[in-house]
Image 1 (tube, one colour):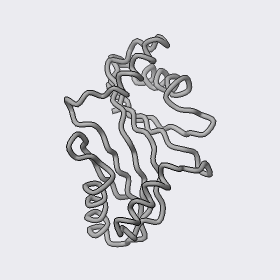
Image 2 (cartoon, rainbow over the protein chains, first blue to last red; image 1 turned 90 degrees about the vertical axis):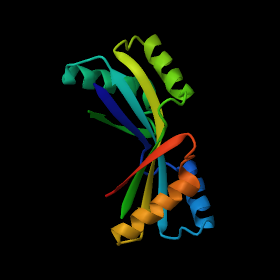
Image 3 (tube, rainbow over the protein chains, first blue to last red; image 1 turned 135 degrees about the vertical axis):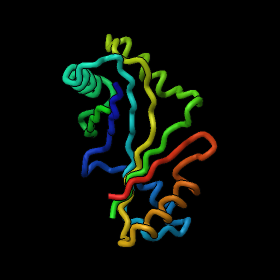
Length: 79
Length: 79
């Protein structure tokens, strides 16, 4: 089973990386861009077949390591 | 319109960040994890209404800036 975890900064938290990318896109004349947010996508291969167990495990991994839950949100998708 | 760009290392390219995360998860006793790949997710807000034009623009942004196409692949989703 594969878990896709998307970690992104919470709304309201300054995204300096996103600002830098936005500035670079402007300088390359991509003027249709109004905002840029940059996050992480973590793809986990699991040797777990039970979806409920897998979701609980991955949620715990996010809480313990993959996301800084003070300033980041995470979404988990099992495929 | 919003574009979600997922940038990930090509298969076969060593993912040192993924290896580090995998090692950390092991040390936290998450033993069901067999592989970890870490990539970027870039969320672009566009003031463009034409989907075809938006897709072409974002593709060009990936080629020019957002992805290092020598070692990275990218996927674009318009929502």
